[in-house]
Image 1 (tube, one colour):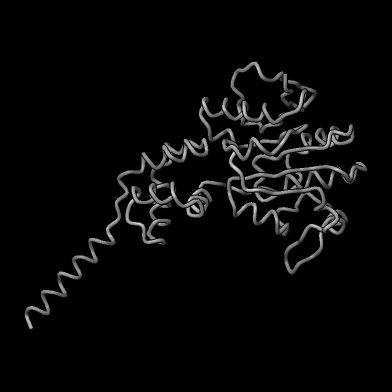
Image 2 (image 1 turned 90 degrees about the vertical axis):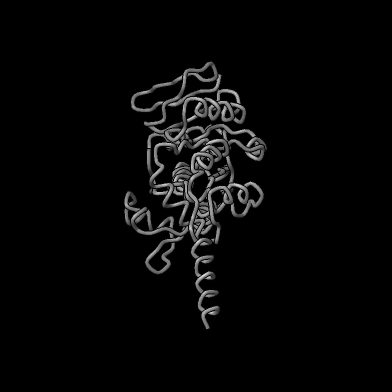
Length: 273
């Protein structure tokens, strides 16, 4: 009888040891994220420790060391992990002045535009709506994002009323069909649009082809100078001659010889040299 009790106690100790999580190698995990995506998370260690630990425990992963090994081998797990890093809160008709400027390019017959990152597709569809309003129905707009969740939502093309707040009622009726409490983009306005999970530092990104304009807002704010420069270099390779790069107000472009800064009234963009 004593032996049975003792054995049960030993088993409990083994279980206790098994569930004890090792988060000591967070710096290496942060280093991996930076190398893979350019995002520097070193200032957010407390939040990341909790978030990454929860991610691991949900999958019976006992340490960040084990997680590192697994995401290097398992692309599906890596994608789920990278989904933790992205913020996709946005809405339609954001930064309208840049959208209208891009539509002017479409009216000139310059048809290819890249949105990187595109989040859940609001920017891409906003551009398509404005293009149709301007009489342009033939174009190729590509939206990419590191988050597969964001791309899934973009492909679903279904949004809450909150993200449509800048539209007039008649515009909502024109562009969307009601779907319960949500709204889905009508098929007519989905033509010429493609969404893809893609990392801007990947070889796959280089194979997207050339673009007349790239819209990249609020991505480089998470990068250090090295990765900011690397980003505008890869964009430069994809832009056609005199192609335009539009960035967010908080995206500080490092000094370079690749672009000419153009400012017209309240509009600023970078033209490929």
